[in-house]
Every structure is written in C-alpha cells, then in structure tokens.
Length: 135
Image (cartoon, rainbow, N blue to C red; front, side, top):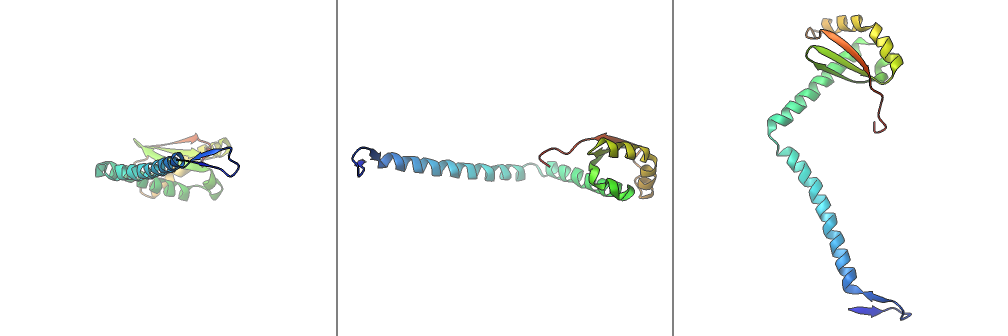
C-alpha cells in the first residue's frame, strides 16, 4: 500500500515501514533473550565449576586482605592483586617504584603473614602490573 505525500512527490510504503519496525522489535527481543540466556548458561553449568571459581576468588580476596595488613598504608593503592599458587605468593603492583620498595620488605611481609598463620607461603614474588584503562 503506497500513500502519496502532501507534495505528491514521494511515495511512502506503509507495509515496508511496518515490516521494518517489526524486524527491529524482534532483533531487540533476541538481544535481550541472548543476554538472559547467557546468564542462564552460567547458572546451568555444573555447580562444582562455579564453586571452584568462587573458592579461588575467596582465597585471593583473603590473601589480599592479609597482605594489605602487613604493608605500609602508602602502598595500599599500588596493590592491584595478590595470588597464592604452589606456596608462592605473587603480589601485583601498579608501578615500579612501589614494587622496588616492597621487594626490600619481602622478609618483613613474609614474617607478618606467618604470624597470621599463613605458613604455606614459601616465597614472595612482586610483579609490576599497571592498571588497565578499563579499571
């Protein structure tokens, strides 16, 4: 069905517009269903995988809190993360200057962590990992 505009120069196809609007609504609905389905997919994974992931996150969070309690407050903003694997604690620092100063304090940090009961830590490694633009 075509309608003539008031100036009689342009034809407007109502059916084409309706098809376009319907197609747009369907694609928006598919995008919404996709994001909902991706959440459902995560939740439908075997529970052990999610539990393992959450256990790792909890362990790293606890280690980070312990490390922060053992270092001077001036370095707290420089710490980007901590990870314990195979008796090696890795402390990620945002800049080289803080990393260098923390390297001189590794023995004191290790002693403090052992006083907190973290005897499984054998060595401490300090790495520079700058903040990304997404942080």
